Image (cartoon, rainbow, N blue to C red; front, side, top):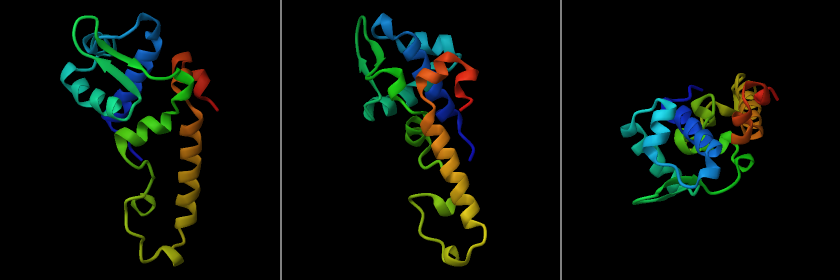
Length: 140
């Protein structure tokens, strides 16, 4: 599994919004500057987060974006699934993929299943609140 810049940046945006949630709506430009992400790229990520209901946006003066729930209610897995699609380590475990014809006798399938379960379990256990605390909070 290789997480794209879209997924990584979405996590950075969500963490940034969480860290500034007491300030009301945050302008996209401010997030871009603080995170070192191009405004043009953010314009592609934020609508996806809004459409999924993870953040809300308001246009005009005093507008911007904010979280729709508390940081500890955002598992990293939810954000990565939204931005990356399925986060399975191999194509045969991807939810949108047709069942492999070798699945029944595949000797490696149990290993991939277990890896998928471990990765999903870990990413589901880490929240935006954990990312706000720093590296030590993600050592679960």
